Length: 324
Image 1: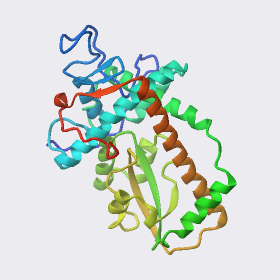
Image 2: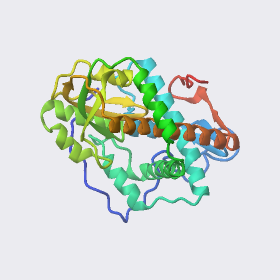
Image 3: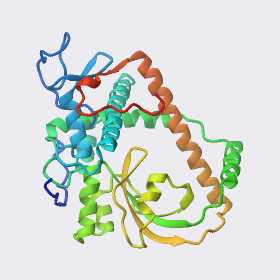
Image 4: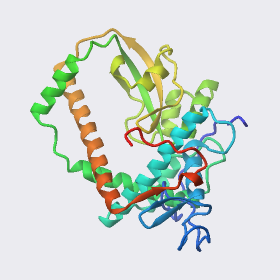
């Protein structure tokens, strides 16, 4: 497969450019005379139905290109892992459609300037980015879903003092971590963008800190953080295990997000101060609250908006979620 060259992303789009969503795609006027009655919003066989909306194969393929550089060529993943990753991306596309529709029903809106900023932050490291007109609706829908989840999260009650105390005791009961490490993290909007940045860092064209300045999508990225080794997700431990201070990891996917990590130092294990224990406990409890509320919300919305996946029309073998 042709080797990708890292290039600095272009600047923000003209805010007068009309673009809309990061999880829908290729809105094609006119009905496609394939399958049942009505039309699909994108070309190709219908691969899913979300409520009354039919999702075309072309829409899914554009979504995969944007997130994985799925150009049909050689993949860095083995076929089974690639099928699993693409299955989870299909699930994410469906979830974004459901959440985006609910966001609109609740009166939430996303402006063109927000879409432009997201698209600029996600500029790809080569020229294979789908056309901006195709990405507009895709980005708009993803931002709607995010706004809905943020609104729901703001309404969650804060963890109680008793909950925090129990979480601290639970953490203390775990086996003592062998060591801690200090690292810096940079989150990317797509795997392909992370691959391009990692190649630029390895070649010496840019440093990790220049990558932070170029690709930072949220404030506060690239700051040093200290973590307990044994409390890291397994996929992150695998990526960091052989790195020495000053080295940067390969792109790592954690909880559906893609990161690069710079290892600054390995630290001798120290007893955390009580304030740090409380802060870690609150963060852990809050993440679990948000995870549960998202699952509950999607469960309720799916009951009113049935979803069907037509596996025979997918360009990969669909792998169901482990819990069903």
